[in-house]
Image (cartoon, rainbow over all chains, first blue to last red; front, side, top):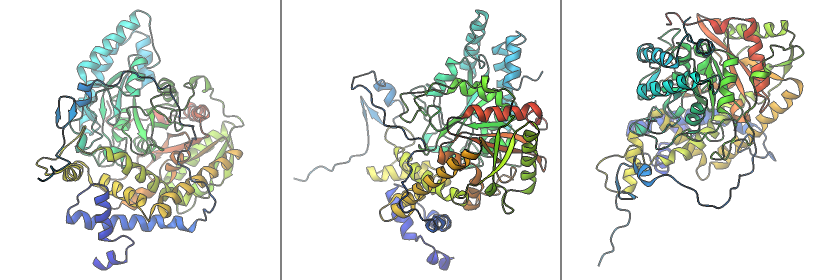
Amino acid sequence: MLALYAMSRITREDVERTADLARLSLSNDEIESMTHDLGQILDHVEQLQALDTQGIEPTAHAIPLATPLRADKASPGIDPDLALANAPSSDAYAFVVPKVIEAEEG
Amino acid sequence: MKLQSLEEQRAALDASEVSSVELVELALTRAEGTGTDLGAIVGLRAEAALAAAAGSDARRRAGEIRSPLEGAPVVLKDNMVQKGEPTTCASRILESFVSPYDGAMAEKLEAAGAIILGRANMDEFAMGSTTENSIFGPARNPWDTSRTTGGSSGGSAVAVSAGITGFALGSDTGGSIRQPASFCGVVGMKPSYGRVSRWGLVAFASSLDQIGPFTHSAREAAWVLEAIAGHDARDSTSLPEPAPALESALTGDVKGLRIGLPREYFVDEGADPGVVEAVRGAVSELESAGAKVVEVALPHTPYVVSTYYLVATAEASSNLARFDGVRYGRRAENVQDLDEMYKRSRSEGFGREVKRRILLGTYVLSAGYFDAYYRKAQQVRTLVRGDFDRAFEACDVIIGPTYPEVAFPIGARMDDPVSLYLGDIYTVSANLAGLPGISVPCGQHQGMPVGMQVLGRPLDEATLLRVADAFQRRTDHHEHRPPGSA
């Protein structure tokens, strides 16, 4: 199995780096199986490289629409109590998260 | 009368043979029995539905009938929000989420007089084609409970197939309405991109996602689409067009209509011959009604699955970044810092397939790979759209199988993502190109339903439904019910 991974186009380290970017922490087993699965998927999608797409415009949306504009006027938003109703942790009108900035020393 | 189809229910309501309250009571009984046995229904709002039904009955007595859906029960795929109701996306990360607002579908259905009964099972975040990736367990096919319902809108397909509700809503990002409709022997329609508001639909891949109906007949699908379509300023990709008039387009007449059969959909190494035979039989039926058959080419067909999985996972990795344990959803306990909170909340909350797709999407968007994978896929998407533009110069609709095979056993594809993905070859193009598509029951193979897919020009739902309706007027496949249904 190790030899297979070595030949594949995505390495264990790639998966670990990508998981970090995606804010996922994977178990050792998950890293192994994802390396295998993503390798298989990337091997398959490699077929696109055979297509000549020089000068072809990329399509982001199938039906092109201009971004709609609206008047810059205040309108009622969601009630703050409702907005906080699903918060895992809240205080008054705020979402509570673990401390982000450490206190400066001295 | 079994009162299973929307048309039967509407007729019985109009004739005062049944009340909406009685229909809702019947649907609740079926949902708690069959619906639970088949893993189709994951939440019911009995009290609210009965109250809404009483309101509908009162309106009807006063002579107010809001639409053909008035008084009829419906279930929503569990990724469409309704105020005060849970929406889980069949994911641990949203297990305790209760929506603080009404999505567009809840509003539209209420405005049409329909009664929202509850929520239907699905693959987690609509990622999958089997409705097995669900915290509620797999949904089961009413035609053979050892087989998958298809997915990701499997619960919605079962609700209609097993006669729990006369119609249901699902969402279709790469076939998630049409494929389960095909597997469960019902009609499933994905409208043109932008036709139905995505406001209040939990996003998977925003440039591909589209909501649509499950019903038994094309006529019923027309009623539902008329009720749910139309511009919504809260969805910036919503088409600035009024809901189209569809029922009036169902003339039964297909004389002179040009049916395109893509040669790439009928190659020897393609679909199961039993599936192809059923679809060819359906095309012959339309020919005998006066339609003409032409061969068309969709030369980029071999590339559509790769293109789809690159675009869809890239968009998913971005959309699912919002699940961070801060504002809603699961938060891991005993975390030391913010980064650990993000990582553990997401890792504990997402299932395997969702993690796989987030990783793939993050990888193809990451520095050094963006051009080779994501940009390349967007360019091939342009080529795929070009194939359809050219094909539709020679034909009015395109017909082929919805899926290469009939429903397979539960668990059969769990460990082989690539082979499962490749099954989406006939459905993903409609999402990539923004086309409307419908799956219509057209026969059986190995005792299981076969679906015929009809694809139309962008915004031409009317022709699509006319063809499907004309077929159903001449055949009775849509009247077949699974064994042991109520």
